[in-house]
Length: 142
Ligand code: FES
Image 1 (cartoon, helix red, strand yellow):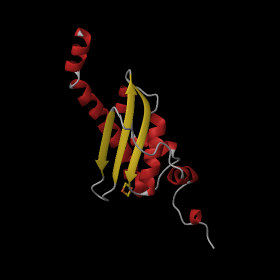
Image 2 (tube, protein in one colour; image 1 turned 90 degrees about the vertical axis):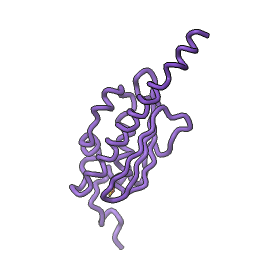
Image 3 (cartoon, protein in one colour; image 1 turned 90 degrees about the horizontal axis):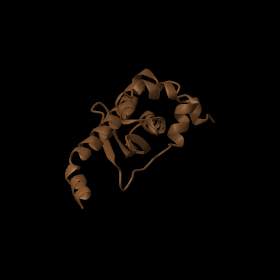
Image 4 (cartoon, helix red, strand yellow; image 1 turned 30 degrees about the vertical axis):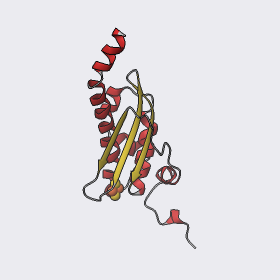
């Protein structure tokens, strides 16, 4: 009987991140949350970030989607820990594809979801920060 690996288009790194995803889940007290969907396939990816002093200190994901999307979100959350907000804003899905050792051409869009979810999480963080000044000034005057 054939092993599942013999049927797959995916390399070992992709299979590893699909079978043993890193950073799966979310945070009760996330600083930024990005949730995006792929119109073509209906898959959904949510990435939650912990951010301190302009640096991503931790990341989690929940992905309702294909194996490539799960592997991409697993790898993306690994890659961005310790990066500044500016670095994450410039993050590209190509970095995920490269770190995974490649994805089949029809699956590249799955890695784009990871880039979009990360950028949406940073936007969410920045929107929350903009709405905080009142709290900060209250704390300063207390
Ligand atoms: Fe939809 Fe991969 S097929 S994200």
